Length: 168
Image (cartoon, rainbow, N blue to C red):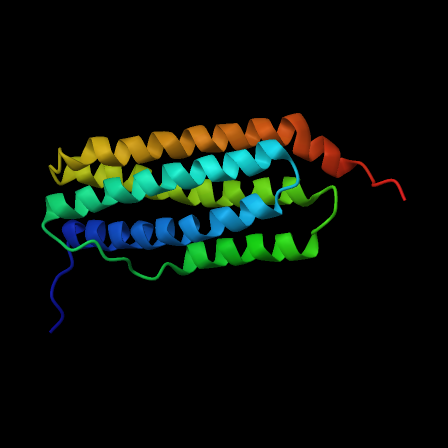
């Protein structure tokens, strides 16, 4: 007979999911930085790589609070989002729309992370994991700020450039 799954189990599974996701994102960001055509885009992706490293460290602290090893669980969603980003890098390489596509891909990642961290923070509160809440909230706030920066970058330069045809 299967054992009853609890919110504690779901919290741990989701924590493993986002831990795996952050590790995959950490690998993808340098590729995105290399692909970006604008200096602002390159710098933004590299800055977010450093933030992501800090987010991974905070997640490791949450695992520690739970008394569990920091271990990821394959996250099909993030693998799909990253694969879409790689497809854009390949299909739009050398075009004026590349940076807009990279920003779009990065925002898909951010929105996934925002959803995960918001949920984990709420569950941590329900489960009385008071030491985990500020760690998860710090990650959530960074993801929200990154999403806002990406929107500003897209609206200021990448999207307008992508709308113009390259001179032949």
